[in-house]
Image (cartoon, rainbow, N blue to C red):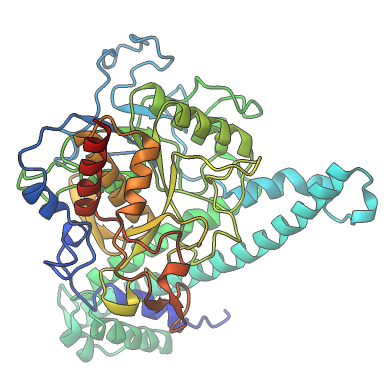
Length: 536
């Protein structure tokens, strides 16, 4: 067997999370009073909103599913007033039977669900390979074929790169997971103990060279604070292992297509009525975490508090382990709009689009109905002015949607580490930044955990938008977008920060987004107050 060497970057990532501490609710704290880069939620409710009345706002969470029975979410879930649960009848005649808390566009009528799906680059490879593999540009005469062939070359190159990257990361995590599990078992038997902590590890005598290497790695992890014992360390590794496994086995598998589970006519992008009412689904960690950030019940003494106090969360499931499909995204947006959402959170994205037009049409539909779309900028430390992150606010005709915001991620760390190292950026594309590192929120089956990503930054910003709509209901989507951008804090605008994806390359914060600003509820409420008084 070929020796597998662990990259320094992977080890560094494994050790990072436990090295420094911050308050679990840091994203709700105030930059001035609390010295953390939060959005001033607590200060705003205490000082600016304590005597004001709110109206309930429905927020759509288009994601992997939401655990609607979670202790911190069950009281804030949207419940369809026109539907009778479990009778199999479309009581409100909206085309979706038993849609009590939302809808699932990646499930079948028989109740089965898609868990893992292909990446879009895999689906495009499968579609284009029979026509273009082994050919050259000279084999095609029409402009359309030549253009498609050029796309195929890009897709083919990207597919190979992504496959190599994911398989490499998966194999390293698999090596760690299996190796640490092995020495954990061996050490427990050898020392006759139930737990292997740092002290026990020092006494453990490995039987072979591989286990000696694993003992050394375990020691490094303990020193870095990655778990107090091997059971905890292994659990942390397993999360990464479980994350990459479906990408390798399904996401990049050209021979596997799970769409038959859904049972729709996939060639018809405008087909609407398919799926099932299971809006939790088999793997709802991501969507449940996002929902909690937006609106986990405040001041109930449980777990954590969301940003928005008077919201109802509508769960629309269309994001699998893998890339979401454009048809499902378009239908999810339309479903949310038609069923009363004022703001929609979209913490997902991809490099390629199968059918951009159908998504554009849905975005335009939301725009026509005054619904604000909050979209995650992505986690590839990439300039999305140069590499499009779909779905995007720019239509095929070059115009931009007025109701669409892209959000980058902030760290809680001070100084030049303010921008999350993974966050995408773009002077023309990213509208603002919000907290997105080590965000503590709800997870399925009543749990709470930290997670990081622009996927977490976006619901923070979405929660802020929902508060504005709740207390100032006459504001339009376009007006809320303008307020969020103009009221954003410019503390770092002229300062240099570490460029995402680099170790120490310095770049002006203002060059990473349109406005050089960070979302802040306190400032947004003050601006909304002035704006509505001027208009009254």
